[in-house]
Length: 445
Image (cartoon, rainbow, N blue to C red; front, side, top):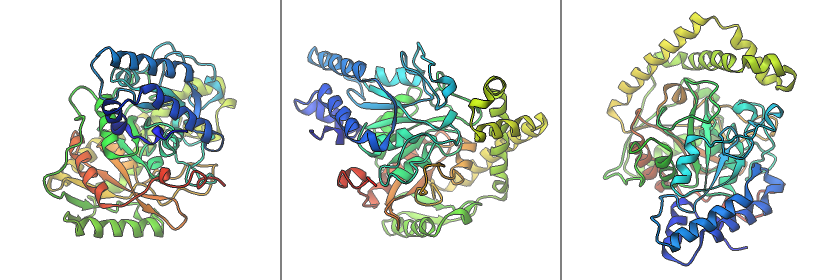
């Protein structure tokens, strides 16, 4: 098998421009990689092999005919199975929707295809993007969770099955699996990426993001996903080291010793490379952020899933039924109070960030847990999802169990280009070799 599957999004476009490599050859290489690894990683809900190969051949013909290239021309992409792709089932990780074939692609998928992406299929999600896990294993160690809910997307990117994949986040479902799988996860500012055609059970919180193998790739894909002109296609390099503020957050005690130590080391390393790194606590109002998030998510989920639960309660997991039941018990007035408090948090965070380019903070409690029965705790992602600000996780090192540890970088609402720029600078300060640099058998148990 050739190794075209190793190419990231930007590298793939450059290779297609500069050599005789074809989109068809790249696409076939990725499918061969999937065939090799899927039995043990199980990242895919459904592959769309025939259509993807036909799409690749058509793109090659267009290139030969002189048609203008898109910024993702030929890039293989996976789509989380709560996002619609025309002609494929959107099963949402539930038997209730196993035959739910859609006729129209989500807007974000259409944008990717207009930019030249090759949609390879649907990646595994947890049940309705909540906590009940799917079948996917972490490529670094198949006894460990890949995180969730964007489980298949993270594992597929980490293992070289695709250059990028779509994920979504209601609590920590892009950032956490990226950290667990040793890749980059980017959640743009809430509202920049449309959710039309995407499961949206908590409209206040749900946000679509991207998983990729570098900050540059994440920025390139996100620029296509976002509304026109809101995110630049090329991640700019900062003219000087960034001004950072290290935040441990009110849930710092949840970090295990390895993650806490890694964060302290990251502060030291970034400061040694020239960044100004202050350390500060968030304003006291953030002590209530997790309760505010839980109230909003639980209430909105109960409204969205009420009819589904009434008809299919026995087909839903205990986890999801408990969420819906809890939401039904929340008074509407308490929900409205939580929404108002969320707005206070947004305004307070904007002021807190006025003297800094970005926050740095852990993305997860530690390495991926040694279980397939859960997907890990999103607690270090919750407040950034709640406030809708851009957040990105980059891998920085391996922990004591040989699995990745990451660093989360958070910015001001709407300053997505700034966050990507800071993340690219930080990425260069760490020497991290991804799963693709290991022997192909390293992830097997």
